Image 1 (tube, rainbow, N blue to C red):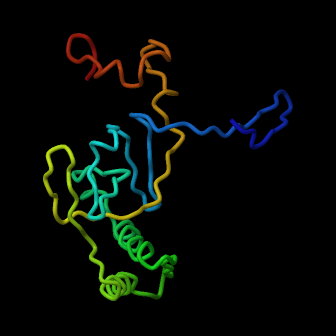
Image 2 (cartoon, rainbow, N blue to C red):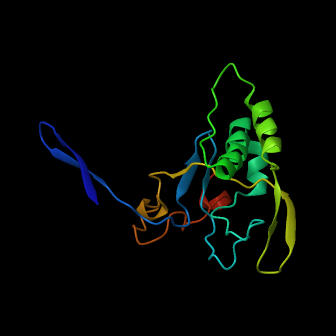
Length: 174
């Protein structure tokens, strides 16, 4: 890692170290619009769906979670990224005083783009139509599965969540 800061306190010296670690199953991720989630599956490029140009998608969101957590900011960011990719320029909007959705729709039409596309599954060759594809800023948060310790005293060598559901009924619980 890289030392970011050193804080001298009355009885200790605290060293803040920035590390770069690969994402793992169980790590927490978040976007800029309140969307958050947990990495539940990692697959190789050979199994990931591809867009219309044959490029491998980096990340896919669970459609069951998207509906209940999606907001307009995420949709507009993803759609505006398609315009930015086509024109090679950043797509800048103001937060207030502008109807960004109408402007994005007009820019999509002017650049011959749609807000969705058909992706293909390389495993079975099936086409999946009507998928919102684009770029979003996604951050990996400090909550990493390998740095968690279960509450049942099994130690750090057991993955977080290993202990399963708490017992009920005669063994205790509610």
